Length: 260
Image (cartoon, rainbow, N blue to C red; front, side, top):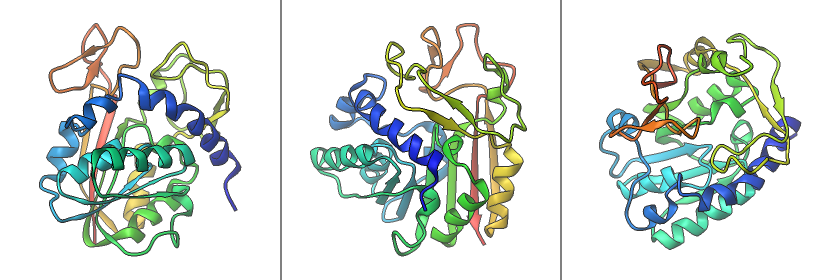
């Protein structure tokens, strides 16, 4: 049975995806002209992906998925949002890239697609939409080949402690919000309710260990993958910092793990 709060987020992302697809921050037009959406952290971690099968969880409308396809990977993208998958399929056609896209809640994915993959990939603004990280870890483990690599880069779980108002690092109740500004178009207020969960880094790591993965690398960074505020500054590496410079606490983390 679909998770009711995940279904609320599904409605919210169906609402937002059109804004993001056309917004200059996503650089969709530039992607169609040959620009890659991939950032230095994931490029360095995964290296040469030519000929490798890659499952992209929570892919939104497929910019990263198709960027990996452009690098030579055989890609499958999964997202809960119907509209995101529709846009991803449209983008693949326009870019003339081969990809399979599947609409599914990540927690309900086992049994929806078959096979295992060389790489399972997830990035940027994703894990906080997952209610059950332990179950998520099982999905990652299920779809990795023995010896396969999982990689995630995302907001550091410590970041919400510095929101206004702050969120406890160990919060167990989901954070619910309506009428919040979209992170691209800050003049647009999202009509549907958004539900986010806080997951300490230990919870994320242990869910992967329990699923049969070995942690190979953990990275922490005092820069961000998008401009959280309109005055944030973009560096030459594509990441963002406040105008005062890098923060004294982590904004992002990355994690690379391998299936035993």
